[in-house]
Length: 161
Image (cartoon, rainbow, N blue to C red; front, side, top):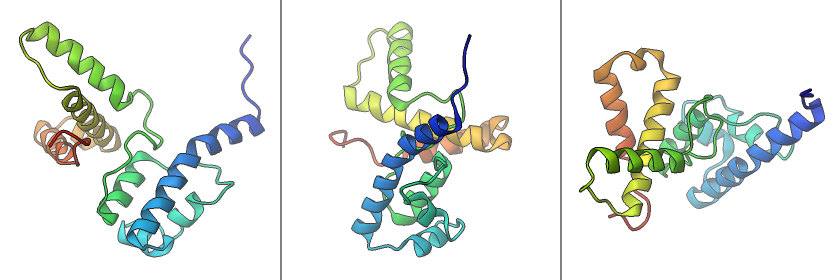
């Protein structure tokens, strides 16, 4: 019989997921000389979004969409594998592996360096997150292509350029 986690266990799990997000936020604020309120406003978010998220006992996981908005406002690459993603959106590493396997079956002579697979996995994940966040985009091929183009514009992993 499966026993659901207690409230304390759920809170601990949420806080464990939020810790690296808070660390990323603090690092960006230090690098870019930002304060929580101005950064949140610049990203078009509520004024307390960042200040709450960097607290030690924050009981929520910041969404990937929020992290993308914050990253864009700060002019840094988004940490796409940190935020709370909609259920069913795999990590960029899993997506890269899926793409590599599919391409090897469909075009056996095609060959790409590992860092390019990583970049493609990241771009696909970003695109899927955008699609999950915007239902109108899910059924509009033009908007979906635009989301993919925007995702591909993200900074490539080190060593790909």
